Length: 377
Image (tube, rainbow, N blue to C red; front, side, top):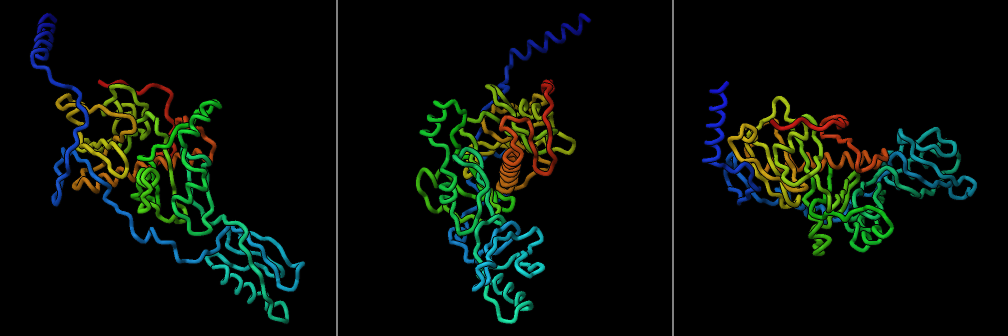
């Protein structure tokens, strides 16, 4: 026993004589180009995607009908035939003598011609039908987060991002925030650097700071059905831990939080995680900064840990990366998809923003246990 105590004392003395920094800040440098990146590369870079010029042009396709659209129909010359009907879930409408006419995917002109053709089987004279679109339900876009009127909006005509924001009353402005503070409402301002649009599960490279603060119309793209726009809170103090961890989730930030602490708060890594290429992403979504951390050496104490900041993303991969540009695209798409899924779930289910429910991409809903995460050893 005495020998063990002497050995521990000698080890402690050696540590005091040769101190090594345990924590360090994010180290950012310019990325190399034209070659695969080294495993420990740290880079500051713009999104690899660019605005497609076609996105800035109004769509040329005519509106097509779908389930939920409300129509007003009338046989011309027969005022009593006027009625309002809804396109059924099977894509059919039911009008007058017709047993059901499939209009799903048809323009108004095409639907009119089909209805007239079907009606001609039941009347002697060729009927003429008036068809008016009264309400759109089949084509919508999502607008959630720190805006005046979050919700799901119909997309009945060509609509740009600025027009969509205007429909929602604009983002949470400083004036509106002060008014809400006076009224006792705890809303927060929108973080334009972390605001995003998702289309088809992919992050679009729209820079909301340039669009709304600088008036840069090169970012003012036209929306498409099912686009998702989200404005996060500017004063959120969370760190997102995603990827190959037991519970992908936002972790409350506190001073001194490091990568190891954030991963521990997500209940550690899972089998198959590639610990040598854990990434820390910081900054705006359009110009993210990234550093690769060898997490295995960090938890062994042979490498310095990294101090995190609010809104950092910590991503534990399932496999090694080769090109940092592709790696960061994977991280950002995972992040925005997870945020969008949870924001949508809260909006539809009425779940408060402070709920512990978090739905990671590719997984089911997970309920964070009330117990504290295991300590770091």
